[in-house]
Length: 540
Image 1 (cartoon, rainbow, N blue to C red):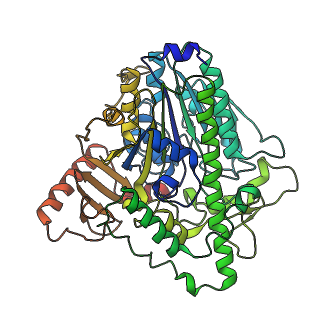
Image 2: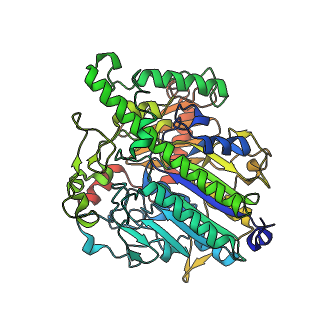
Image 3: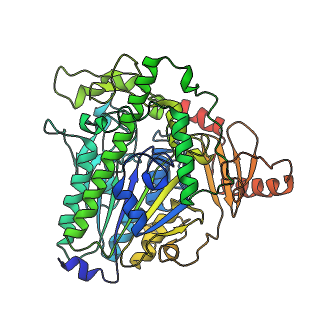
């Protein structure tokens, strides 16, 4: 089938960026997982796999950075969505940055968004009377360059009864007994493709899943495929994934797996009933990844059905590493007991907490899979979401583009979410705007990795910097300087030791000092504040 859109985009590809939520480095099949992700695995075979792609260690900073091609502080989301009174930490997108949508619209692109937003103010479920999308402090996709929007404005929520759910410019409630948010995101993305493929314009579609972010909720038929698969425990999963990653060549065999987190008990020490429950928690998490992959398969199939697959660039990545936190997004777990107040039918209740006596999965429970399984998700790395060691910031990046990508190519060049804007503009032949509503915008920080997608040699010119909650790092060539707040700098040769096992800060003190000076200069130029100062601003 051929459409006007496919003919029009012969020189200007359609662009789809798929972002998932809280998924670890080894949670998809082509990166060593036992979870069934045939559609993502097919993307890896058909396109380019980037093995050293980085995010910003947390949900909303990554989303703001990806959308703008700037570091989170420059985009206004230096921490989370609270407004701390300074532009770098105002909690919503600044007026002196532009989104990918705002940059592509002047080039004639139709712009669409399906899924989680989370970079436009604090949509606390306890204060819906304060939700004001489109007003100062509450930008949302329609006010930041997108023609179409379906999704949630907040960071996370119940998969069956999500709050702050919108279509275009109005709040809506989930409809139907079979509503499941992951499916709704996929279905709406397919509808948007249908709309765009019948027009004259190329399109940009941002698909943002909440899966597999907690709570552990997914239809029972998906859970059934994984229940019992994890009774061998987290160490067995880590070992098997590490071996598969080594065999695939994504890892070097000389990079040893990081030790099990000291806060994770030995599986054999757990009571049998506890092992059964932990098996089920990981099974639900795996089913959430599986369900998302099914939806991605529907999106890719829709591209083929509409005749626009060949000249559509599709990217897939995660917003941070596996999540070891216990239901504390934005630091406030007290909101969740009132979860259904604005979305569910009267009389429905939800029990919040990792309660062994309860079965995870249905809408009436609200659990997380906890630190030991997050440790497995991030195989072979250490630490998690929040931190900027590899476990917190490393993500698979898959790029499919039948008309332009060399199938099966793998790139080990370090790249970052700030590079996605530059890559999209490069592919579209679009210019980066100098102004937005009469205000000069900040220069683009990212670099286009489009040459690597085409199979050519590519290396990032500028260093990559990280800061979140005082955790900081700089990656320059094969070297990474990193610190877990409030600890000292650590130095790693990533060519020899990407799992960060051998700190060279003392042996190579001059190099560590030079990289630290680079970080300090970057942070000062972008008003990146010390974490204790941010906490003071947060307290007001």
